[in-house]
Image (cartoon, rainbow, N blue to C red; front, side, top):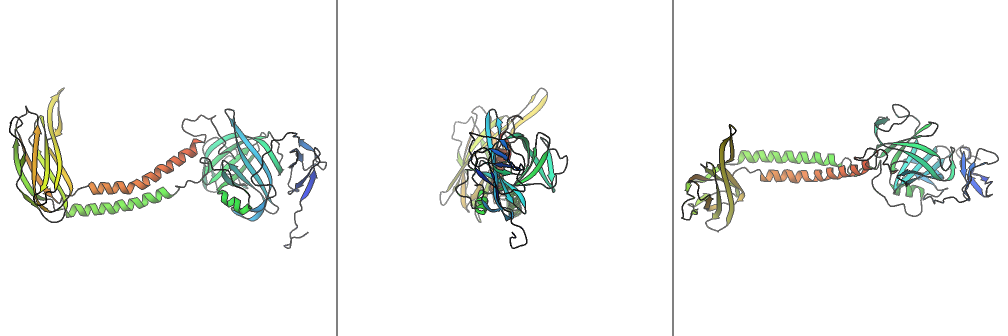
Length: 445
């Protein structure tokens, strides 16, 4: 009967199970090779007019598909409606532990078959390729494969075993069937090859899909499994974000550098005070002193206090307090100096410096004086030193702080992106410290 558009409707037919007598609908009758009895789970030959039993199960492991067979609706990336006609559970075994994933076969009489796979709450919509990837048609256990200009990196190879089937399939399928599955990834895509025992190779391309899109398009009841871990072709939430943040950070750093250059060019480097002093460590008198009052005019600026001495094979520490003569506001700091030299094994060496400086980042204008408290080894010789105060100096503190603050967000994002990718590849054949036999099926669909 035509469907109103000149096309014949595809009738749903049925077969009777020779094992239990139950009737099983066949929705892809012209394509079906296997049909699984929905009552006793015996696998039937749909191509045999007498419906031969290919595999009989009296105690079948029952797995309830999340997408019930007969469900109709749309799937992401395809506007035409499809119907769920088949379901199978596949697994690999690692160190005696079985890891399983589920595959749903969907059919449209005019557009063929599609697949939906699920492992640990991760979903992919999969289509069989009509053309082969570049290179040898046989997959390998390493390297890169290219398909339609996109490079895919080898992720994992494993032997998959079918452990449960339900519905109908356009190929011979039995519980216990095995195939080598080889996956290559370029998130959000997964390029997969299945190699059967007779070396037949089938290539497919999967697209990572949000469960909400599948649930909405197919009107699936209930809730999906909880998402576990990072899947092979799961797109990174940081993809493209790190690069964009680094580009923005580079522009901000350039702006900060321009401001820094302007700051360097406009800093007056004005000497406000200078006094030569002598400190005798052997003296029993109090060595602390107070300088005359000097003026720091203009706006609040960075102030540098330099201590230059004639130290020779000795050290000296100087405690300073810059005190506002009118308000009493005090800036306390210290300067440690040491200068040593000698000859060892015929080679001269030096250590330390007799000159040092401390920069106070922001000192308001006003009338100030310094309280100076020198200290050195009691047996040391007298030290001559000069104290110089320079106002409105260029200080890199704010510039360095700005660079750190600008770089911190992209650094954190890059770290998280690397951690996400590390979790992805830790489940692959190429994980650091992982042997070639240490495999899971997280990524074998």
